[in-house]
Structures are given as structure tokens and as C-alpha cells.
Image (cartoon, rainbow, N blue to C red):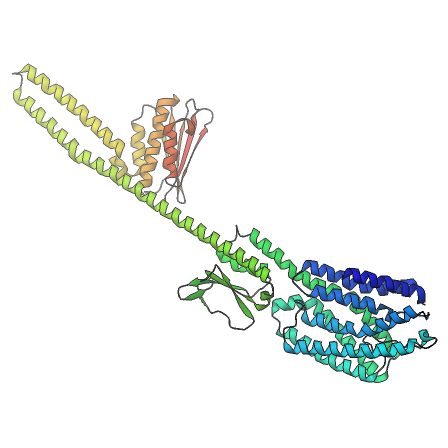
Length: 569
């Protein structure tokens, strides 16, 4: 199509140079304005290859280029110039038919209603009739000598000053304008935004056409009518291509919105999916409904009924049966690629949300299972400590009492036997002390009876170095948390005594929200590293079991600071 337009433009330029009576700038403007439609049509076809609007604009540009000599003021009487003028004036009415077709079928380039197809067909038929009549009349005039001054202006729609032709054009324009307004009235809000630019300019152009045609029908081709026709022609050429292109660009921007929607999926939770889709598809009334056994519900859990021909359409997400549906403006069905992209993006968002929810559920199950294991371990330690205290230890104490009574009965009569009994008593007492220490290491009774603070103080009193206790706890904690904190302090203080060469240590206990902070600081040589020792790594693992953390840093001026945080809830 652009090649044909260029060829016709060369012929028009030759006509203007051979027989033109006006300045060259006039003919450049005439040919250039016709080329605008072709250029915009090509651009529209590139932007929206799935639309016929670009092709119609290119055809209209070709007709305007062929029609251009009809507006030239010609002085020559060359035969080829006369033939070109006949052709130009014969196709002149066709520009009205093409323009009406383009505007009423915009943006798809298809006429969907019977009334629309009927009015456009009527305009084409009448344009062809007027074109044939104009061609015959013009051919008769250009065969006469001095025809350059004898050919009257054809008017924007052809037919010259014929009242009958102008009245028919006026009738068709009234019906066409009614259908145009009805199309806007029936359009949804989203479709109206697409139609706003071209239809606004188109309605203005149609009103001006009605005015000029009305004047022509009443008083013929007066100077005022000729001036309005010229203004109307230039307005159509300069304003309408940009309006059509702006509308197509506005549609095309929807794809960029979907791309932006895809980029934000990682950060948009399901409850924000509807708002993100509304923005991406430029449909403020869009709704997302999720499938349930008994129908569909919205984000708030309210039941949603699927639309039935009320300007809304349904987009299924996730196969059959769908996992969700998108209730959208029916005009979006004209954008299958856009809907496919939106559907894929929405499916991806829902799958991501489902996977995140599955991971959260599994993590919750793991945490609950780990917590149950921790509690079971603490309870098992308590049971062992009770069994040792109430069972073996009590029996050993009973044996000790029996040995003491036996020694008293023997008196000093058997020195060897008495010595053996005394040795047995000493060994038995040592065994009792070791058993008590073992029970205390498994789970100290003071921890169960009096809590973490008392247990840590009791632990500090048994150490060979002074230990200061900074206790800010105001309440008892969960037994599992207290046990984990106690053994953390015990392990840390044991490392201080064995490895740090410290002279003093300090233990801090504090509670912030649901986080217990345990801090052990010494004034030793420092250098502790969790990666270098299984003891510190064990403390880190213990903290991780409570969704906590462990950090080891140098203390000032010397020594090591170990900080463990545990989740209490």
C-alpha cells in the first residue's frame, strides 16, 4: 500500500507542476496531508497487526492521494491532466465511505451489528453512485475548450452543488451519527476510554459535515460552504489520524501493564491480586473469584455469581475445572493475546501463592513437631531426674543408713569389719554425690521448682570463679525455653572455666516481647569461634530449634561475649 501511495503522489506532483495555478506550498500541503493517513496507517498496523484499522487507514490514505487533484486549481488542458482529474473526482465520495467505515468499526476494524453494516453499505453504495455521476459530468466538462475554469468545485463529498445529493448525504449522516452515539452509549467504561480520542474528534467532524452539507442543500455551493468544506477537510486529515493512533496506543499500553503486573507478582500477595489485575487490564470493575466446592467466592469470602450478558465476561484460570475466574469487561474479549497473558500471569500468581502457603504450612508443621520433640525431651529429662532422685538415690541412702546401723552394732569388737564398713560408707556417699550431680546435669530440680533465675544462680555458686547475675526476668517461661536457656548458660560457663582463663564472668537474662535474651560475658583471653568447636555449634543448634540465634563477639577490653536469643512462644 505505501508503494502505491508513493506512485500516486508522484503523479499528483506532476499534475501540480504542469497545471497548478497556486503556490507550490499549497500542493505540498495537499499531497502531504494525504500521506499522513498512509503513514499513520502503517504505524497502526505495526502497533496492532491484529486490527484492521491500520489497513483501512492506509486505503483511506491512498484514496485521499488519488483524490488530491480534485482540490487543485488547474490551468492547463493536457489530456492526461484531464484524465487524472476525472479519476480524482470519481473517487472523492469514497473517502466519506472509508472514513465512516473506519470510525464506526474502530478499534477492531470490524462492524459487529447489522445496523452498522447496513449504514456503511449504504454509504459505500451512494458514494459509488455519486462517484460515477461525478466522473461522467467531469468527463463531459473536460472535453470542452477552456475546461480549467469551467469545472466547479466538487465539494468534500462530491456531487458539486446538487441539492438531491446533499440531502441524501445529510440523511445518511444523521443516521450514521445516531449509530455512532449509540455505540458509545452501549460501550463499557473501559471501551469508552479506548474510543474517547477518535470518537470525540469523529463526532465533531460529523457535526461539521452536517453543517456544511446542510448549507449546500439549502443555498448551493456558497463561498461560506466552500470555506467550511476546506476547513473540514483539513481538520479531518490533521486531527483524525492522531486520534485513531492515540486510541490504538492506549490499547497497546495494556500489554505493558501486564508486563509490569508480572514483575510485581513476587511481591503481590493473593489479597492484592485483584487490584493488580485491575491496574494491568485497565478495568476498575474487574473481580477475581476463587473456586470452592459450592461455587465461587471473592477475596473476602463472599459468594460471587457469574455474569450473564451484562457487559461482563468470564476468564477461567487454571484449566477445567478452573481454580479461579476473572470477571472482566466484555470488551477485553477483543484482546485474546492480552487475556492469555493476563491468564498466565494470574495462574502464576495463584500457583506462587499456593506454593508459599504450602511451604508456610509445612514450616508450621515442622515447628510444631520440633516443639513437641523439645517438650518431650524436657519431660524425659524431668522423669529421669525424678527416677534418680526418688528411686536409686533413695535406695542408696537407705543402704547408707543400714551400713551405719551395722557399724554401731559391731562397735569396736571387729576392727577390720568396722574399717570396711567405714570405707563402704565413704564410697556410698561419693556415689550419692555423683548421682545427685548427674541428676542435676540431666535436669536440675531447682529449675522445675523455682525457675530459670534460681537455677542459674545455683549453677553460678558451684563454679570456681565469681559469676555476676544480671536478672531482668519478671515471670516464669515455658519449661522447654527455661531448660534450653539453662543448659545454654551451663555450657557457656563450662567453656569459660575450661578454655578462657577468665577470672570473672557475668550472666544476663532479659525478656523483650516473645524473645528471651541470654548473655554470657567473661574477661578471659577470647578467640571463641562457633565454627571451631562442637560445643558452641551445639549451642547454635539449640538456639535454632527455638527460631533463635547465637552470636559470639569479642568483649571489651578482653574476653568473649556470647549472646543467645530464643523464641518463647
